[in-house]
Image: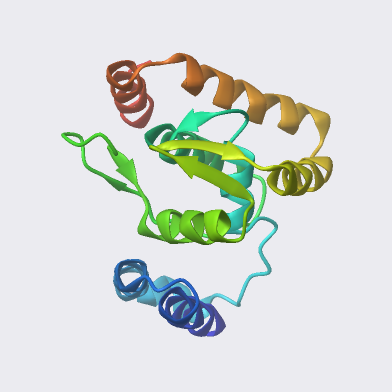
Length: 176
């Protein structure tokens, strides 16, 4: 039951702090669809928050759609080892943002507003403040995890949109 209360509080925070009714809506749907499972679970202290996930996902200048893709793959990797705040990704294959998270988008706007990330015409870049915070986050990881995350980001940054869609579909449907 504590997990449900924690997630409801996160939904409230999505509206009050980040101004995102959409992310609160998807979080409430997530709670409703997994309610039975959450009844027995205790609340979790996250090893990595969504802000951490975003800052880890930007290695250099990157397009916004690539941020969502790298966040997805980094979340997938980290969530197997750590408690990571749930981004609630959705897939929209016909769109530029074919992997999307209302929660990440709301947090991204907050990180831009608080000058951790600069955004210009869909291109994102860490500011000095953001780079320092990213280094603090990365310093908490083992070197093997850091290298894996950098490999994920480099791989995604090299691909074009069409290649990313194909790569992601193969990954999701284990056609690799």
